[in-house]
Image 1 (cartoon, helix red, strand yellow):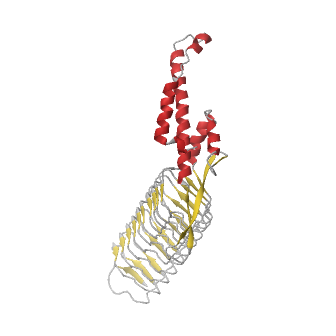
Image 2 (tube, helix red, strand yellow):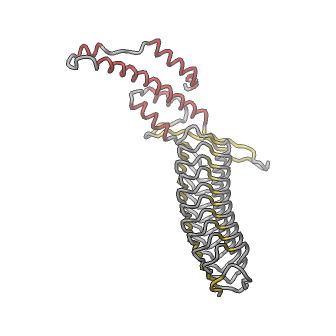
Image 3 (spheres, one colour):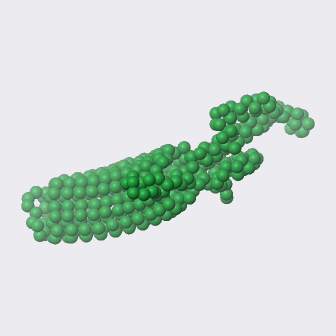
Amino acid sequence: MIDGYKGHGFIPRDVTHVRFHPSVTKIGNLAFEERIELREVILNDNLREIGDEAFYGCSSLQSINIPSTVAKIGNKAFYDCKSLMEVILNDGLRDIGGLAFANCDALQSITIPSTVNKISKYAFSGCRSLREVVLHNGLKEIGGSVFNKCKSLQSITLPSTLEHISDWAFNGCTNLWNVVLNDGIKSIKSNTFHGCRSIQSVVLPSTVIEIDNLAFCKCTNLREVALHNDKVQISVKAFQLCTSLERFKFPSLSTRLDNVIQAGQRGIEAKLDDIPTVEWRGGELVIPCVRREIENRFGSGVEALVKLDEEKLGKVKRLITYYEMKEATTLFELALWKTRIDQVDDADEIKRDAQRIEVPGPVKDTILQYLREHITLDNIW
């Protein structure tokens, strides 16, 4: 055992326990590399940084408590610590380096403090026993492949402070079934959820504006996607090989559509029926997928390309806009009427009724003609 280690000097290969001296502020690069007998490490409260590969390959180390004074954990700091079951990260930590805890086979859960703003690429890659990950608001960046092949991970909630989910972030998380994305997330990069075959549904918040190529590739049990932003840019191969994907839902469009119907514009329902396979049921607007076979990139066969039917979505959006504007002219008439009846004796119903004003037919025609020209309404039906 080394009691009161001061951060310098030779570390015996067979060391089993280390307690750091209060004067140590940084653990140097490779300081305890491959000390395979090391089982216990007690860090001091003045420590500021854990260097690159500081505990690389310490295969007997079972737990580590990172004090709140530590702001940075270096690249590969605990890489390949096969027996590391418990990692306690405290508020104060800001940066988790690349591959910092990669291949820690025994690690089962991790809570990332709210002070962490960056988790670098591959930080927890290959942690095959990792079942629980807790992330907090404050996190701004998740690097590529951070949770790559964490095959035991079942659920993840991504905070609203995170704007982009990087490439391959959850690649091969085959048991991941619950993904919660909060408002604030803007883009889902390529292959983010590649091979997450347990996901059955996903809800994308209104802040998402971009879904890159292959973002959900090979999510073979994904059946439905809800898009709160109907203007989101979806790459043509975003859902490639999602062989079970059947439909897209649009909660925001559904609300607009329901408002139009509740306002009395029920003719829109008949027009919706004229758009094949588009469904309006139980207050939900459902647009089906388009499927076609394409040659795979290796030229050895064909594979399923599954994507949103953009043409039908466009027709639905134009139809809703048309009826919203149509309803707006009625509201305009009522507003004019109310302005005039406010000046009439409330008891005189005849005079009140006489104040009704209708928007002249030519004005209505002009409005509707404008809509036809600018939203190509003729393409709806």
